[in-house]
Length: 386
Image (cartoon, rainbow, N blue to C red; front, side, top):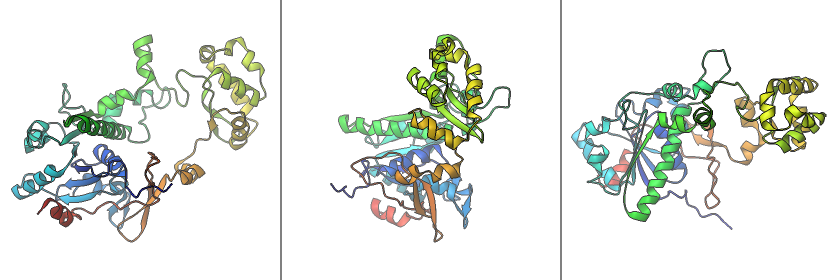
C-alpha cells in the first residue's frame, strides 16, 4: 500500500510563530514535522536571537537551522502600524499563535489572549514562558539553566559531593517545547469537537517538576529529599553503569527475573539465591556490595564482549556512546534519525530526524532548509492578500 503524498496529520493547519531561541521554536518544529505550515514572525533587526548562535556555516547559524527547518519567515515590527496590519491579516487566517515572551509583553503590544480571542475566536493562543502567566514569579525572566536549577532536576543530576551539573541538553527548554506541542494538539482536537479555541499556558518551571517523576513520590511519600546518584537508578538495583576492563556498560535488570538471567550470564547464579539479593528492595539495601561483586567479574572482559554475553541472555544492556558513536549506530539509519537539509550556502546539514513515526505519512530523508530572515515575505503577503 502506497503512502499518500501528504506532509502529516497537521496539514492544513497554519501556525504563526512569534517565539525565539528554543522552547517555542522546538514546539513549532514538531508541528512543522507533523505537517503544519509554520510562519515565523521575526523582528526586522536580527530576527530570532538564535540566528546569532553558533556553530556557523558561511555566516548562517546551524543552531537556528536545527530547530527552524521547514518554516517560513517574515520580518515585522509589531509597533509599526503597517506591519501590525500585516500581522493581523496573518492572525485572521491562522489556526495557532505561539509565543514565548515574558508574560505581559504581548498584552502591551495589544496581542494578548484577552485582546485576540474576541477578534479571532478560532485562534488557539499558546504561550511558553519561564514561570507561566499566573503566580508570584510569572513576570520573572528565565533561561533553561535557571529552571533546571529551580525545578529540582539539577539536584538529582551528577554525582554526590561534587559541584552541581546541568543536564547535558537544554531539558528546560525542550521539555517546555514538547509539552506546549502536546497542549496545542489537544487544543486543536478540542476546537474540532466544540468549535472553541483556548489559551495554552505552559511554564518551563512546571515542566521541570513534571519531569521529576519518582523523585517527587520519594519526597511526598517517604520524606526523602533525593540527591544525585551518578549513573545509578534510585529505586531499582542493579540498574546502572558498571566498570568493565576497558570502559563502562549499562546493565538494567529491572525485575527479579532479569536479575536471575544477569547472574547466570555472569557465571554467578548463586547471587540470585543470596538472601540479601532475593528482592529488589533487598538488592537496593545492599547495592554497594552487589556493585562490587558485579564489577569484579566484569573486570575480566571489555564492554563489547559483555554486551554480547549479557544481551544474549535477554538482559537490557548497552554501552555509553559519545555523540559520534550514537549517530553511527545502525538504528539511526534504520529509523531515519539523521536527515539532511540545505544549509543555504550550497551544502547540506545533517540534523536530528523526527522520532514520531506515523504509518499514514512518509518520513523522507531530507527536509526543507531553515528560512533566511524575511525570505518568504512576498509569498506570505500574496497569501493574505497584500
